[in-house]
Image 1 (cartoon, rainbow, N blue to C red):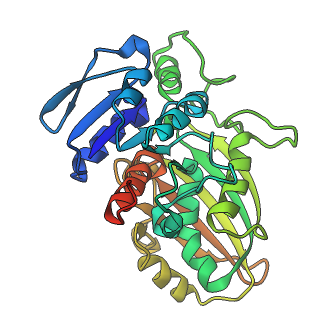
Image 2 (tube, rainbow, N blue to C red):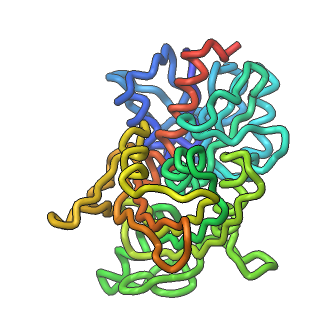
Image 3 (spheres, rainbow, N blue to C red):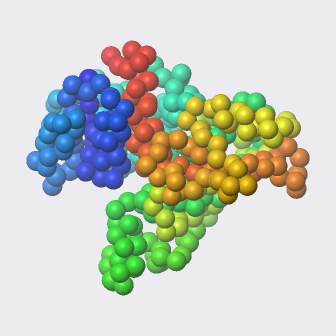
Length: 330
């Protein structure tokens, strides 16, 4: 299998390389791809060294799969060019997520939608992935009416520039700002740009992508997304109202039986999900599972996951694994 990793020198691209190695992905040739300024850099993979090439060169090599993490503008231009030469593209950006003709995939939930005809496949937003991983099995059992979610998101979701801003602030250095305000000792209710409705783009991703992945436009979702000075993963306080009532122990059992979900919920030992313990792991961690006593059929959850792994690189590689395992690469 010949695999291109587009955006290989970025944060997600580097983790993608690690995840491909860890999971023994069946690669015969790695094609590391980045901007022209990175061409010629060396990337180590499974004891071999590969040189970074530009996008045009990568397309000419006609890889079987291209894993994209290079931003929406790049994806809009180059994903179709890869698809035209027969490559299956799995894209991490927001470019294709809400395209009516593209699938938005979390493998544990809806990989069964994929066919050989799907040449551009969208990877959901990081904060959406971890939320639907926990909620999909509960929706199947109890049917979700409404979700209220507040996120507490790692600066790693913004990228290297944000991490550098925090490092500069901790060191007392004036430097380039990724955010409009300091992030050290702060919380910014401002993830991505504001839309005309007063919500940020990140908040609306949680609304639109959740409905698409769960294939239910009747689910009402409202979100507040907050950037905090941590780097290990995203955390979410989720309040979910169901059509049908539930037994709390049954909810916990369903989550414990869900592949890719780990329940951490022991109040006696102060065990609950945290970014510091989720960092570097592929699972979605769920805890603080409790009934909302203020209205019927409603549940509170705390959900944490490494946004660069399951929220990006790991989910992308899992999609590719599904394609291979089900002979969907033509």
